Length: 117
Image 1 (tube, rainbow, N blue to C red):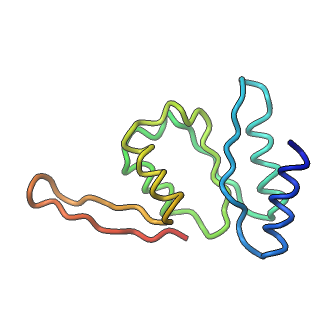
Image 2: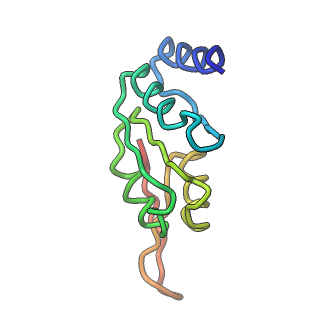
């Protein structure tokens, strides 16, 4: 795993871009949080840590994502406990670097795209 992660981080630094998305999976105590700290340190980027259970609404995730700076590392602990609407929003954010904010309710609701760094 060390070699694979090293390759991802080195190639990102050589291209002067952020590293691709990394999914760390395993039992408690394995070192997932520590690895996220290592990734941030190796990329010389700030680290933002959040928790899946704390993200109950898509708006919670939108607030976190919109406050990130370009290249900042986001680690979501217990991501499997994040709400389904927030999870769907995360997929869009990861793929397209944007989220859609819904303003209003019912037929008068409007979707506002928010670009992410």
